[in-house]
Every structure is written in structure tokens, then in C-alpha cells.
Length: 456
Image (cartoon, rainbow, N blue to C red; front, side, top):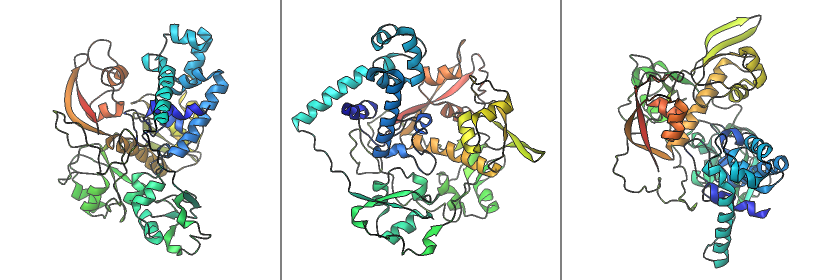
């Protein structure tokens, strides 16, 4: 149904730059786990940010829900609650109406129960506005698509095409900031969108061979140890202190903390950003400044700490009968599926190696063994670092920490309840402000530092 096009009104108010505290991104608010089924989402490209690609993915996802559940009220509610959860509710109650009235299990609370109702209300309001002719719709961008024959630096490509980085970003919203900072190349085979005036056969055929690279820049990182200073680390890796500061968004004093993971830039990685990432207001209008104006608050914005904390290295590496394996400590937001993607393996193989049942999840702090058959340990660690840095960069592009409060653990508390139910925070953020936090055991009456979050 064409009315499904109004769903972003409920999800994001049609804001293509919307980002939730728990990682849902874009106009259609895909989470990473769901979005990966339809879109490319990584440190270089996040197609959730492209309204057209995300809309096509949403259509596929809604169609899957409809085929599995048999009605649009159920399919739309599953967009919020999940298809598996709605299947269980349907088996128990038999219809959408009975689910709405009687179902009380799991996390089926106010938001999920009223999601379809909110959608119907949003459609009614939006259509009324359209009939009033008070809304002036922007004209669609006329574009031409060009597939890149190799990896390419964004700055060099802009100079070759004689366009501004802002234009490149406007036409290619799925390209993430590391591309424009010079940390990563635009990938080979990426379908580049350009203004229609570039509709010329062989636009890139005459480009110098030096424009393209044969491989992507590999991420390299270093975990800060006791006694380290930024200048010592920079010297040890043969880079300038300034490039290390810029690559990691350090303050001018280059303050470090033990356990912090620093990106080690190549000679180009530390260069200043080519553009300020495009930001939008609640109506999806481009803001003139680099940040959205925040309402006046009493709290002072605290200096943002976007450092990736946690042990991302593989330990206990050994080779047995030509099989390379090692151990890792699971960090927040990691899953067996994510590890399988990085290892180019199957989730089942990881479960088998660690004797993990099909219905059992892994949890932060857990130690598991991984086998490196298809990728190197260095590539695995680099992908892991990029993943966590992506999570934090996206978060701090949308939220500020404006204060710190404390919370005393009471009987019955779990990490999940404290994060999600009491303070509405992602687990990795709680860990960042509580270095000694034990994911598996909370000490009664112990005090936790709770960051106060404000949307930018």
C-alpha cells in the first residue's frame, strides 16, 4: 500500500540523519541487525542514511512481515516489535485486535502496542497537510550513476571532477565521515551518484591511473598502557602528534586514559575533515551551521570522550594442525552473527567451537574462542575496532554528555535494567564511565557513574 510511505513520519519525522541512542539510523530507523539483511552498514558506508536505498529496504522488510503474518496491522507492528515476537503473539492471541487488547508478554509495551495506531494517525495528519498545500515538496535530485573501477580518495576525486566535497556528500549520503576525513577510501565498485550534468560516457575512463588504488586503507590501532603519552605513541608509530590528535578527536592537551584504543593514521589519515557532515532539523531541513541549535539547558556540555574502551585484541593465539585460533573477551553490542561476518564463517561454527546452544546468546565479559580460517587476525581486529568506533562516532554526532549523576545498585538490579529501563542508555556508554564495571556481577550498594545525555 502506498500509505506505507508515511511510516518515516512515525519513525523519524522524515529526518534522514536521525539516530537513536541504541543505534537505529536514518529516516526509516533501521537497527544495525535488521538493516544488515538489506543494506550495507559498516565504518565506510551506511546505506541507512540514504533515504532511497533505505526506503527500498523498508519495502522489502515490510513485505516479508506481511507474508509471514498475513495482515498489515501485524506487519507494521512487527516493524517495531520484531517479526518473531509478533508470531508468538499471534499464536497465543489469534488476531491483531486480541493482541492489542490482551497481549502482555516480553517487551510488548506501550510503544509496540500503539505503533499501528500512531501510524494511522500520522497518515491522517500528513494527508491533511498535503491537501492544505502548506507544504512545498523539494524537487528530487537529478542524478547519474557511475560505478568506481577502484578505491579512490574523496579529496582527489572531488578535485578531478571539480565538485565540492559538500556536493559529493549531498549526492552520496551513505558515505560516512571517515571517507571525507581521508581515513578511508571510497570503495571499489561503489555506485557513485553525481549531478546529472556528468551524464557523459566514459567520465572516468580518461582519469589518470594514479586516481585509483588497488586496496582499502587498513585500520590500525593501539591500546593505551600505563605510562603512555600521545607524543611517545606518535613517535613510536612514525607519525606526527598533530595527526594522532586529529585522527582520534583528542583535546589539545592530548589527554589519554589507560585502555583507550587509538587509531593510528597513515600520512593522510590525520588530515582535517573536508566537509562538515550534513545535519538536519526535525523537519529534515538542512541546518545552516555545523550543529543543530540546542535548547538552553542548565547543564554545561562536557568535553566529549569518543574513545573506544575495551580489549579488542585476540589473545592466546595458537596454531594446531594448521588451524589458527585465539580467544577474545566479548564487548558490548557484539554478537555471534557479527563475529561470523568478520570471520567470513558461519554462526554455527562459532557455536560449535564454544559449545553454545542455538538458543543461547553471548554476553559482554564472556571469553570465547575463534578460529581464523578465512581472515587474518589483524583484519579481524581492524574490523572490530572500526565497528566500535562507528558506533561511538554516530552516537556523539547526535548526542552530548551534559552532566554526570550517580546511582547506587539495589537488590534485583541487572545491567540491562539499569541501562534500558532506568536510564535509557546503551551499555557501552555505561561501561565508558565505569571502568571497573563487571558485566556479570553487580555489587549491592556499589555506586555507578551515570552520564546525562542530551540530543544535539
